[in-house]
Image 1 (cartoon, rainbow, N blue to C red):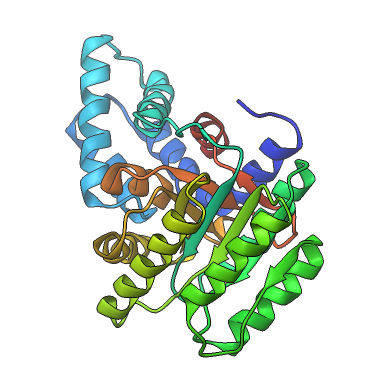
Image 2: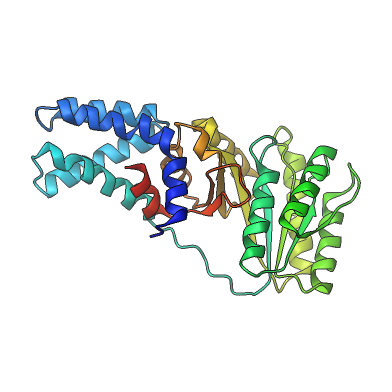
Length: 304
C-alpha cells in the first residue's frame, strides 16, 4: 500500500466522493438502531447515489449481508469496517497486471475527445521519463489538428520527443514512422495517441486494427497494451463509453481522469465490477505529476 505524498494526493483527490459517500454512511449508521433491512436499504441508496451503479451496489450489499451473517456481527459500529473490507476485496479480485516480458513497450491510448486523453499521455510520458525510461510519443489522432498541437505542448512539458504528420494523414503511417524512430533511437516506451471518435465504430475498428497490425509486424519484440481514458466526472456514462470501446478492441486497462473534480469517484468500483478491466492510473489533479498508478487497497483506505 502506498503512503506518504501519493496517498495524500489520492486522499485529497477523493474528498468530494468521500463527502458524498462516507459521510452519509456515517450519518446513517449513527442513527441506526439495529442491523436490519431498513439499514441495508439506506446504504444501498447512498451507494447508488455516489455512482457505484445498480448492479455493483446490489453485489456489495449482498456480500456485506453475507459477511455480517458469517462473522455474526451485531454491533452497528462494525458495519462500516465490514463494508470497507467488502469493497477492498472486490477491487482486488483478479487484478494481476501482466508482467512485461520485453524491455520495449508500445502503449496505444484511446478515448473520446474531452476526457483528458492528451493530458494523460503527457503525464504518462513524464512519469516514465522520471523513472529513467526513454519515451517517444506518436500523434496518431490525426483527425483533429488541435489534438496534434496539444500533444506537442505536452511532449515539450514532459521533455520527450514526438513524431507527427499533418492533420488528416493516415494514423497508421504516423505509428509506422514512430516505430522506425523508436528502434533507431533505442526508445523504451512508445506511447501512441489514437483516434477518439466513437460515432463511426466501423472506421475506428479498421483504424485500430491497422495500427495493431503495424505494431505486431514492425515491432514484434515490444509488448503491447491498449489503455482507455475515461472521465470520472461522467459517472455511469463512463461505463457505457467503455462498453462501446470494448466492442471495437481489446482494452487492457483504464486511465481514469478528473477524480479530484467529482463526487462520482464510486465509479472506480463500478468499472472494476461491471467491466472486469483493471483501473491502471488515476488523475487526481492538474499537475504533470498528478497521474498515479492505481492501488486498490489505497483507494479503499482513502475512500473511508
